[in-house]
Structure formats: structure tokens, C-alpha cells
Image 1 (spheres, rainbow, N blue to C red):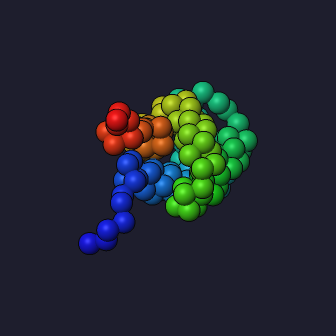
Image 2 (image 1 turned 135 degrees about the horizontal axis):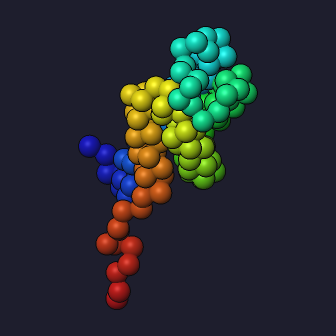
Amino acid sequence: MSDKPRRIGSGWMLFAAIATFGSGMFNTLSGIAMLIQPEHFDEGSLLYKNLDAVGAIIVAVGLALLVTSILLFTSNPAGRVLGIVFASMSFVFWLSAIGGNPIWGALALLADLLIIFGLVFRPYDPTAHKIG
């Protein structure tokens, strides 16, 4: 065992980094699928009609999430802010697209919520506020 002290909340940050990478891969592949095979998406139950534009946007969000995961793995402070922003964008997209693919949409929403929670959550550190 190492004598190196473990930072409070580092487990959630590692989880968020791994989940951000997974969400980035999922969004990128979903966006590519929208561009290549739009017939797999039920356009009648989606809030938008131009799958080419939406596919390109979700590919961009997916790639941004992949870059953000690298920032999180390297403990770059910008990774936390970008992770919250891009996971929120992904959440809004999948919330509007849940009618097209309910199971995958629900899984993506759950993953995005867990990413946001992992990046925002700061557990209480009783040693940080000792008096005296």
C-alpha cells in the first residue's frame, strides 16, 4: 500500500473520466450512424427533422467529450468545466431524441447525469475545516 494520501472525491473523478470517454464514443458513433444510415432512426418521433445537421452536431459533441476525458484523466482543471458543459449538451440532445430510440436514449441520459454528478460532487472532508 502506498503512503500517499488519497484525494477526497478522486474516485468520482476517475469514474467521470471513464464515463466521459464512453459517452464520447457513444455520441460519436451515434452521430456517424445518423449521417450514414438515417433509416435506423424514427424521424417521426424526433423533435428535429434534419438528421444530417444533428448527426454532425452530435459527432462534434462526442469528439469534444473524448478530448474532455483526456483532460480529466490528466487532472486538468478545465476538464471538469468542459465535462459539465458537454455532458449537459449530450443530455439535452438525448432528451430530445429519446423517442427515436428509447432504450439507448435512457442509457445515454443516465450516463450523462452520472458524469455531471461525478464532476460536480465534492464530498465533505472533515480534516479541511478543523478549528484549533
